[in-house]
Length: 355
Image (cartoon, rainbow, N blue to C red; front, side):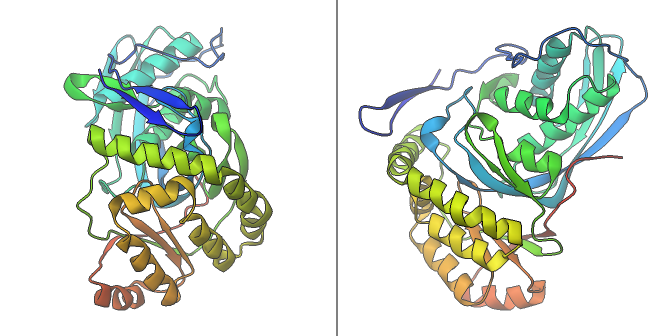
């Protein structure tokens, strides 16, 4: 068991407990547990959910493992996870590279709706690893919709989203799992598409169509820094929480008074300018400087080259670029910086679909 002590604001010392547990333990039914008119089907249900770019957390003082929240901004992109699920008599038959994650959510869902049968599940991630596209939240979004449909849709899409957020886990050693940090941005945009802004407790504050037809590129600058080790993570979180304690009011003001109106108008350039401002505020600044101040130099040069929207994805160092420019044009901009495109795709505004 790992316990980290993280300081945020004045007189604020929080312990993060990263104790692992077996899939099916520590279930939170979110008050949805009840008696539902289930109609189990052995006909396979197939779903496809888009990946996401997570642009920023609003306040890292407001979430912890097993306590989702903190707010955030993100959008869906055209890289996909797919799930096929059907009901079986009992047990879980799982064909997926990370079976513990699937097994845990199946236990959560079954307990919530009162289902005593089993599921057969085949899942496939998008093919992009370690570039900040949220494979866990994407696969859980596709999985939740598939098993829900296989039982006759007892829960609403929003209830599924809340269920995922409150039971968000990552796999650990020997098939065990542990609670992770979750803002709810991933399931919100993977389920509905477009760009979403979330407040605390997984509250969907605003969502809109975004960047229709725009190109999305992910560029990965060099970085020798990891956030995976205990010491590295502790240093990052201490600084991130402290800076969010200082800057959260300004971040909230920028989002409410400027960013949402720009999103509503579809003004990508204005949104890009505002996101650039937030790259220097709060936890996002801590995440960038955790890698290297050179990341700011890369992003500044990309903005100077005329790219409309630049933002570091998740905890980095991946940089997300949204632009009208073609891939060839971007390559010519990146070459003098010794950078390459890791992902080339589009904004997704449709969200999860049934196949």
